[in-house]
Image 1 (tube, helix red, strand yellow):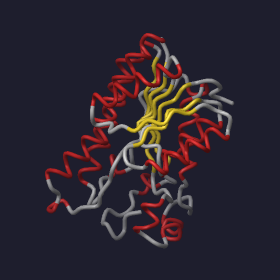
Image 2: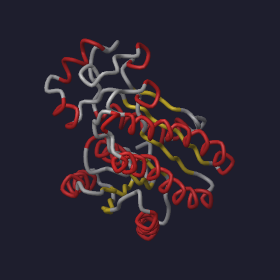
Image 3: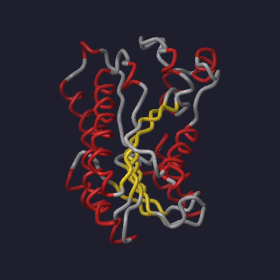
Image 4: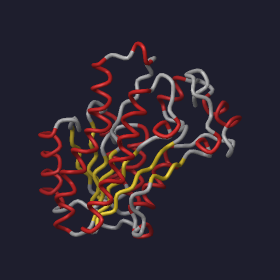
Length: 258
């Protein structure tokens, strides 16, 4: 129970990596605010799993790109639990679109959700954490922020911005006892990837140094470590949990990307 009685907000927790993060934080003793935008059914399943683990849960629907929605979510968290110890900025979108076909609308929506959302949530929560003189902010970024990726120019730009935001926030918020870090997943066997590449796990196993695909729980456990006291001296860092993908800079075309 590394996070006993801590209070965590996880954005985009209704599916994929976010749902695993929320559940694993609860398994380590945290009470969790499960944020979702459109994945209501998934969020409800996550909430039930958290309740089964014996922890308290608050479901909150909010588009993290809207400041009024974010502020309401933080207020609801304080009303329910009295504080916020952990924020995981996981909400994000990644539509595969060729650069020359990328519309301004999709660009704006991606930047607003992935980067602006992380900014708004972090700023709102950091104001609370400054008063508490402690807290952990963990951003979920991507290997695409470093390596680039065809068909994901908008996504990569948003995650590269998140990396820079992580370092800047760590510098400013460190004196207030707040740690800010990021976790960059590599190829993870979540529904979106399995649908795009039916033999996803086999493709990844042949090409990654570790010879296996990552699972959502691999990222969740990394987040648990960074949220715990074990990582109290780590801030301003981007930790890539990618099975060695960045080390060998795998292909950049849509057909090759994993």
